[in-house]
Image (tube, rainbow, N blue to C red; front, side, top):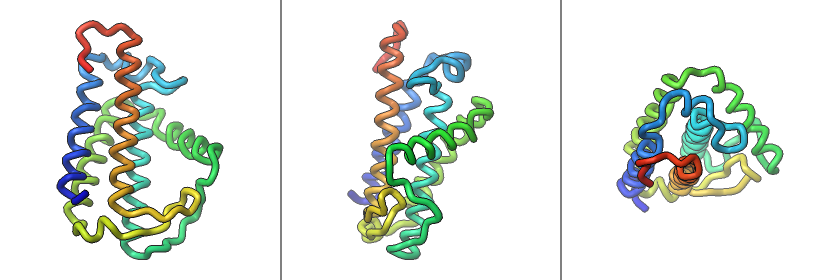
Length: 168
């Protein structure tokens, strides 16, 4: 995939995510559990935290294919710990700040894509998950896939919730 295709994927998925939120009031967005005890606010904070992580890794790979990381995520427990730590950090944020964070995520990913050459998307580098080697373009796709997975969870929750007039 070239950078324009990746940007199109990310833009469409963000629009899909925002459509999945339409019609929900702030109380539903911030108080109702969707995934275990996570609310939509928590889920969006989680998605953006991973977006930040992906961009940091892309920046490191652009400098060196074997960047040094101060941490390793090599087990389900470590993924869970990372996710919980990020969720706890953003839990006190008001809904408006989560919305701003989501907007920032989209802007920063688009800006990064504009900086990258298509050839650079194929550059491989080590990431701190099991010290796997991945392509920069794949890291951007992982962000899209992650957002799509959580959008699907929100849609499923809305259907189970019985939201009338909600369009998938």
